[in-house]
Length: 283
Image: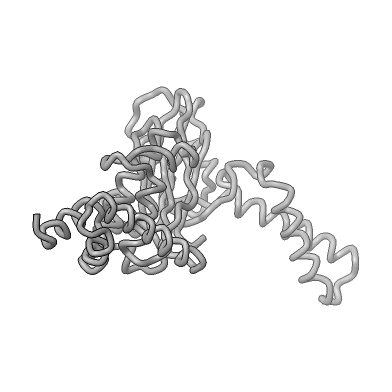
């Protein structure tokens, strides 16, 4: 086998560039196995150097069905790479694996991909090949009993890849077009309104304390008396809870109504929002 044929085979098996494959063939004195190992070690070294850089671009990939739905964030450094075919194909396969392991990061990293290599090994190879830092970000699987999931993708890059994704889980055993329409509309509402929780009393104490501090700082030099400042503070906190809890938000389609009013008007007693998840690149 000529050196050129060896380089072609090495490129096909490793995905490395012509120059790197040519150098590895020379270094290994024509031994393809040794050349592949040389490229693997060099790839780890290259990847390690790139991991100190920032990776704030990327994609959100969604997979699954209306019973079990998963999302995973894969970050890179530039939007250009986020649209690269190799990157896209890698993320698509990764997304399916993520759904199968229920967004368990440890299981995901050690799972084997179609080329029989582990996810973490393919990630290193992808970094070396593309030349940017690539990281696995947030991941989530929603899979509840007696529910139906709805999802929405915003700023779609290709197929199931986007810049923003929303999943909601509604509890209702009835098959009804009105519920399905509401479910789809609600995902778009969440994409636009970005609620923190379903109900106001579910907002964490940490978030509320932080907001209280910001309000106190704002009123500190306002010249208001202590009693008035306290009343203003209570009003602002109530407004914060209302604006950030899904059930109390103004319905984007008809702002005079709240989400809870729309659910009530639908007339299904067992219709409830069990869970939701919103994820956006860069947040």
